[in-house]
Amino acid sequence: MPRVSLDQVAPNFSLADYRGSMISLSDFRGKKNVLLVFNRTFT
Image (cartoon, rainbow, N blue to C red; front, side, top):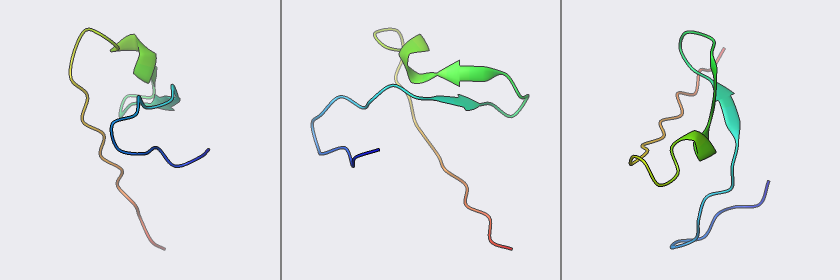
């Protein structure tokens, strides 16, 4: 996936939430602000 530049709309993607339910970014478009936090774990 290409890097998103400043002031561009983020591309749609889906991820599992902490309960295992799939959520898409498009589910929130035009409804709410979205804050993404990626927690990287190193083993």
